[in-house]
Length: 399
Image (cartoon, rainbow, N blue to C red):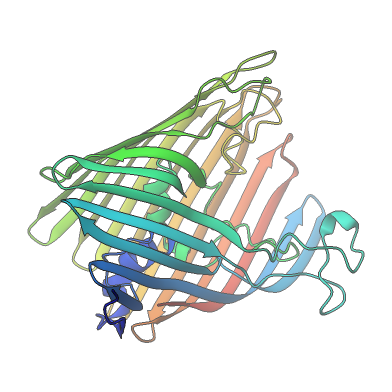
């Protein structure tokens, strides 16, 4: 027995009204938001399809010691492309959701058009390129209700570092680390300058119901063998969040933690703690964030558990302010990460500042212009010191 299959496009508000929902849909596929472009319903089940596509021109100047290089590129931004398929239904009092999300990209550097090359091949043509593959980032299902919470099984965005990357204005643009000569399908934005990348990780997590604006999530995560030769225990992450509203002001405060240990010769524990806040008053919004970590990896690279220098200590902070006038948002942010200890001989710092303009052309398309400066110093990671300047222009469509 089959019921009629129907499809429709949602009627949506202006782009800036839905930017948080649209970006959240790209990263989290929050299926109930108005960011959905197309929905198909059959009986009590719904399949939503949404996604993003972006493209930017970047012009980047790098100075390291006395050497200066300039590159330009057509590239993805901090976000790659994204396509989400989200199944939802309600059965016997349980809200059920399954999500499959793919992240393709536009970048593929080669000296010969049409023949992708892998930089590890030394620039030889005809090598398979790992940079144009489709990255499966979301593959999970969850069930629960508003009375006892929700349980998730599968691969999705992590908890530690989740809220800050969703608050970063350069999520819609390029930010820092453009590396125009490297064909990645992300430019890293402000990752490594104020926060670490949460990543998309296999997990089993539980989220409480929201009570008076408060909610919390905790779970076990697939362990990473960053030291030693055994991973006897899974990783652990947790996040607590409080949303508030008072008159024309609203905001949120959150705290997060991450822990993992390994076993065997040379093993050590990895721990991190974060604290962040966001407040909006009328057209103005401010974000402040900081983290402290031990053994969590090189924060100046931004990748969790990247530990070539052993058990290093990392810390960082990030601040941002934005103001919206009509259909245009203006913003500035600054962040810095520091690494020391372990096998590092110096305190290595990586800081970045971005000035951005984000104009809503219509309910789907946002045009973006950004100027970014980076500076890295420390003999271990930034010998000769590093200075970059990047100008980028482009846009993103969210459907």
